[in-house]
Image 1 (cartoon, rainbow, N blue to C red):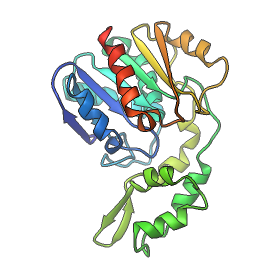
Image 2 (image 1 turned 90 degrees about the horizontal axis):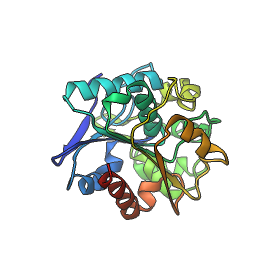
Image 3 (image 1 turned 45 degrees about the vertical axis):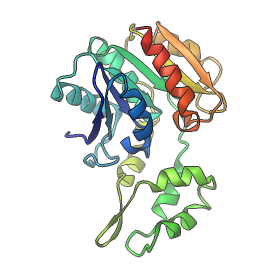
Length: 253
């Protein structure tokens, strides 16, 4: 799959993968910070952003898409950084292709299965009538009963694309809805990644539970942990602290 990406900087390659309902746009500012030292690729995963949409959607496919992207751009053992769903892609790739990356950075997600937490988001997004929609403000009003947090609504509505005929979604809601059980699934490949690995957690996030650190160490024995005073969107809530943690980790490898 020919994934859309943005590129900046020079040096060792660093690939950044967004989370569910996100895109490379979410990482624009931080990518410029990382590009001062690294050759940064911010990538839209399939069914997101400006990358192609497909009826098929799973971590095996996202892992294969990433492997194809690395081969196509002839990247030698890149550093991989992923948030949430992107972090699951990074973990799957690392245990399947441990010799093809230099380090893994996983943001606020663990190598385990999760219960579905996004039904209200999908219901709200699907309630927005694209053909008759007149403005983003109208979309925000419709979405508010489903997603009361204004910052989360703003994040989600970045997926609205104005066209000559009205609006369309940059994110493939039908595929996400159909494959949600696969999106919240555990890692798809056995084994370990024994290379350098950093897990960054949000202290107020619901994505980690007692015992998860032991699960992580079982799959990523060289792991380091960092916790910031945030919810799930760690890099958006504390961007400067997040960048400092990541760069300090990378300075050591």
